[in-house]
Length: 473
Image 1 (cartoon, rainbow, N blue to C red):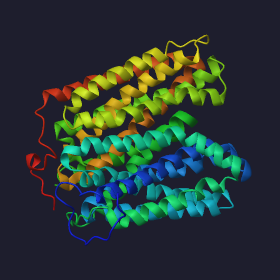
Image 2: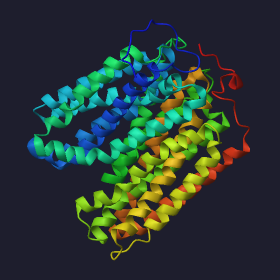
Image 3: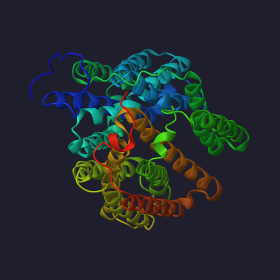
Image 4: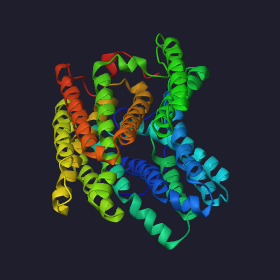
């Protein structure tokens, strides 16, 4: 591979970037993905340490995590729409710069207020990166390799998620908590330097910005997601009020956007059956995943008596199996329907979750590990083809909106799963673990059924622009 070279500023190539520029462009994306995923995992693991150093009570210190997540939740769809309007790299690169700047400010923070503000700034940057990532992958890879590109992204994401707790522990063993954020600086600067030279250019449709829709979208998603989490964590009073206001604003947004040709909330894309079914599959499967992810540590530690370290190691086969399966699934997705691959993968995922619900205290490590790996293989077989189907079924000029919906669907599913676990533990206690895993298995089976429904649809041609008749702008 040769080094990155300067490029003129023409529109992106019609069918992906040539090599070696493609390799450098995806490297910039992988660095950004790894940094954002690692940052989320590191902050969660290190939260007690940070709270102790800043003398912050647990109920307040949780905003170190909440501020980051809330900024992402509120800005995913507005920034995705902005990418469709002005071009993807014009959102992605500034977002990457904001994330890197926010990381530096986190490392320099000496109070909880300053750290929470810096984390919110990080969240703004992370929202830009997450909302535009899939659209850039579509521009970088040829149509015949889009599934492969999605699979490689899933590998990077899985490895980052699996190594996050280990990286956090190693950094805290070598230095104090500011190093957790300072480590992002060289990675972010490298991603910026490579991305500025090699990421593809696009002009966007150039329509005027819709600021009222952006504000309504941010408030709707923020209130619905955070209100639901508050409802599960703190009781009905405040959470119900937030969810109610969010639902009312969501209805106002729907009425305002439904007749627009390229709405900020991509209602037009939801009229494409393949896109709508892929979104439904994604929400349901990520709800099942989060149900299991949140339940398993309590089950392993509380009922099976495993230590925190042992529980973490026992769960590692899951993301590792996703990472091993995803590139294989991505290659298959360029040849076979996502509905079939997703149906098979999610059926395996459901079987793995049901098998996990049967574990007992006398089970050895291998008996638990193969169940975790089965979940990972199934989820990995589903994820890359499903993401490819979502992006490829949208018109090219709406790739940003499709990528924003992809990320939003994942967020909504994860929130639903986490809230279900909170409700189960609230009403039934830790003994609800087995039941919750069986509910997760049912959700995965439902997602498999939804995925298979896509086989009844006419399969669109690659990248489907002409089929839906929407101009690139």
